[in-house]
Image (cartoon, rainbow, N blue to C red; front, side, top):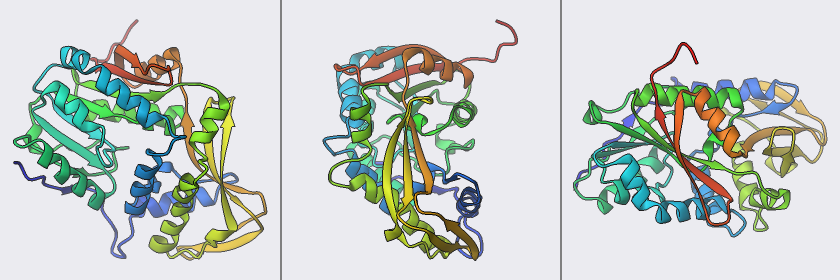
Amino acid sequence: MTSPKGLKLVESDASGVNPAFRADVLAGLSEAQKAIPARWFYDDAGSQLFEDITQLPEYYPTRAETEILRAQADEFARLIGPGRAVVEFGSGSSVKTPLLLSAIAPSAYVPLDIAGDFLRAAAAELAAKFPGLPVCPVEADFMRRVELPREVDGLPKLGFFPGSTIGNMVARTATDLLRSMRETLGVGALLLIGMDLIKDEDILVAAYDDVAGVTARFNLNLLARINRELGGDIPIDAFVHEARWNDTYARIEMHLVARKAVTFTVSAQSFAMAEGESIHTENSHKFTRRTANVLLAAGGWEPRARWTDGEGRFSLLLAEARPPRSAP
C-alpha cells in the first residue's frame, strides 16, 4: 500500500485567515446584490454536509452519475486506456472515484481539494482500497493552475471533474476554469466531466431545497464559517435558505434571505441588509448537449464522447485538450 502524501498549497496570513476567503467575502457583501463564491462552502463541516446531501432522495445527480460510471466501465476503459494519472478536481470524499479507477487501471491518483483534513482522510481511505496505486493528495484551490506532484511528471493525464461542479460557475468563470485545467493537465490530456441537464423545474428546485433541510444547513454553514474565521457577528437565525429557478440563465440559484433588517460586521467592516434582501451563494447551471459542447470548446477542450443515465437526467462527457488553433 502507498501512503498518501499531502501537499498544502492554500496559504493563510499571519492571523491564520485565508486572505482569498476574506477578500471574496468582503467584496461580495459590498455589492448591490450580495454574493459569495460557492467554493467557500467547503470547510470540513460544509464538505460533510454536502456528502449528506448526495444521499438525499431529492438529490438525483449523484445516483445518476454513479449509474453512468457503473454502466459504461468498458467504454471508459476503451476510450481512456490504462496508465493515465487521474487528477480529480474537487475530490471531496471520492466516493465515485473507485468506479473510475477500477475501470481504467491508472498509474497514479491525484485528488485536489480545498478542505485539507477532509481531503487527506478520503485519500487515505482510497489508498487502502487500491494497494500499490500512488495516491498524492494536493490541498489547493483548483480555480487556479495547480502544480502537480513530481510523482506524475511525464505521465499522460486524465482530469476527473464529476458532480456538475462546473455548473456552479457563470460562463466566464467556467471557461477560465476549463482553461486552467488544460494548463494543469497539458495538451493531449483527457477530461471526464459531469454536467447536469435541463429538466422539470419542480425536480430541480426540490434537489436544492430538500424536505429534511440538509441543504439549508449547508447554505447557512457558510455564515457560521464567516463568523468563525473572519471575526463576524452575523445573526445566522435571521437568515433563511431559498432555492430559485432562473429560466433566463438555465440555473438553480441558492440564496440566504434576510428574515428582517439586520446589521453585522465581518473583519471589522460593517454591513446592513433590509428584510427580504439576499446573499446569492450558489448557481447550478443546467445544460443541453449543445451548450455543454460550446462551453468545453471555449475552454480549449474538444468533446469526444457523451453518456447519460437511463432517465436522461445527467451527462458525463469525455473531452481532449487540443493544441490551440489560429483559424477555423
